[in-house]
Picture 1 (cartoon, rainbow, N blue to C red):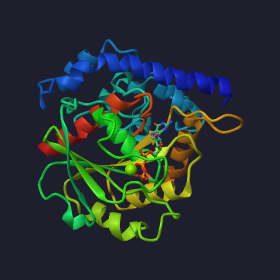
Picture 2: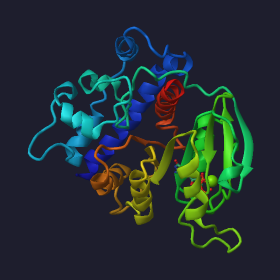
Picture 3: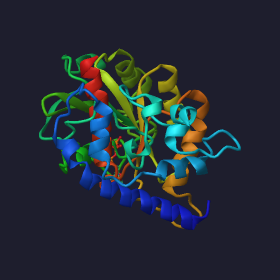
Picture 4: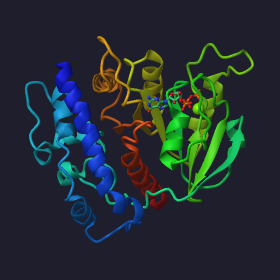
Length: 320
Ligand SMILES: Nc1nc2c(ncn2[C@@H]2O[C@H](COP(=O)(O)OP(=O)(O)OP(=O)(O)O)[C@@H](O)[C@H]2O)c(=O)[nH]1
Ligand SMILES: [Mg+2]
């Protein structure tokens, strides 16, 4: 794709996201009824003021996700395409998806479980150095996973709108323990140590396999892993391995692309291209695309959209 159209695409995503952010305030604040009589209708009504996020179709056209030789038509007419490419949450049938229900800068469809996504308070609970030392209660949690320096701690701070809730650093390897943060006294965000940091001092280096994999495989309250991937660099083998490992172990995952504000000069690929490449490389291992979303902790891109996504996963989990 030409650089110019990529820049336009990135700008479009940013603008749409800003526009959307203004409009979603009511959804962020007002708890949604979990089983309204006609949930999609009411949600659709709330979202109808939004600009139609044609980005997803535009994106998918370029990523050639659609069957070869066929152009994706309007979302409502391409059921197979929707099932394969979009993340359609519980409570929404593929035939009910309209493009105004797709969160901008993502493949995530907003369903009737979304709501009550505003963060009112956040409290650091504890650091654990073994999975079995993690808080023992039945509140749902989301774990931030990703390479050292990908921006896990920064994203937590951006989500909760506090500068130093989770400690960040320019040097990789800052987070060394499993850190639980309790949000609104009802759910946890978990900051995990980064993987792939070979240069850490011996004492700080850890066996990621034993340490963190145990957590994923045994944590019953884990609603979804948020796998953070740096969109400013080309796909890295270690991230692809991680995405594939989660897929093989049926651990629910949302791909959160970070640093989408970072545009490198020269011939370096743009975030949009790196994101597409990453998805194409994991495509074989997933029947359907996992939910993915573009974010930037610097500009706030994707913040409210990600909170809405987490709210629908969490509310569904609570009602299961
Ligand atoms: N441009 C840009 N920089 C970012 C973004 N998110 C994080 N950073 C920077 O990336 C560096 C690492 O951020 P952290 O949040 O500490 O990364 P981490 O994944 O928690 O790292 P570990 O704790 O070492 O695993 C810091 O210098 C951040 O300022 C982003 O969205 N855009
Ligand atoms: Mg960290």
